[in-house]
Image (cartoon, rainbow, N blue to C red):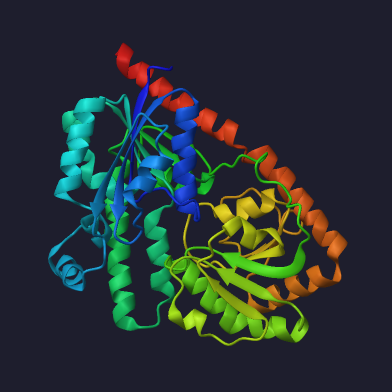
Length: 407
């Protein structure tokens, strides 16, 4: 297997490892590399998530190649309007298309000659014709989410009629684009069983396997530092579902928590924090903005709170918290894709009253709450250990390469 070569294409540099998307892509890159594959990373270095060139080269120096193409992916409202009126593809696919990136892709395909090309975002499928024209590689799509479900969820909650109309239209465009692209790949990697079943119900695809986000559980253990019985949340706040959930939690659930557990404190952090959060004045709530060390921020806090109402895939921060023996309070949407049982591995909360009740129970039943954290870690070790998940993926992809060679 050591002569196998894979080109992995990402729509942003998978670094720093401060959010779930970057961590998921990085885990896959490292999985192939540690399995003995030659890996070339072709990544967009976007204006929204820009990483200095020397940092990109340093972080991925151990790979067989890395190419980073600078892309301006800022929202251009004239472009959005033009796409809405005259286009059929979703705006996201248009925004990530670049002639310069296309030319670099052609160059890498010619020089590296990969056995496999793995695409880490369905929106990069606009480059699939180029891949198929200039390469005979097996094509793999990593599905971090079923994307249209994110926009569908946001559209249903939007009260502004004009914005809701746009989101409905975008949902249809993303859905149609996704469904068409699913059929074009040799293999789909779904991040949850539910996502895989949905794809198979909507389309006839050749091959799909479930490859959940995985973690090296021996590297994530209950912290050595004393932990305070306080709540925390960390995540990219420029991701719409996170922003939506935090606004709901602070506006609707926090007042009830203050009444039932007046001494309870809550800290939240993340990239892309709006000025509104930083200026918010709520008793016992502290907005930390983007923290320099996520692990240090998390280490001394006991309870992860994830008020998520939309979005797909697996919440990486939840898995990490469970692996660290934290107590997780989240919604049915937040725990989606994780084989966890309420009151055994986590606490489910689907209303403001539920969140207040869960916090109060933790504060008054600390020994029982600790047990939930212990159970959660055992579950992650059993179901989401990195070596097993990555091993299954590499084996499936290698089988496809072998079949193509022998045919």
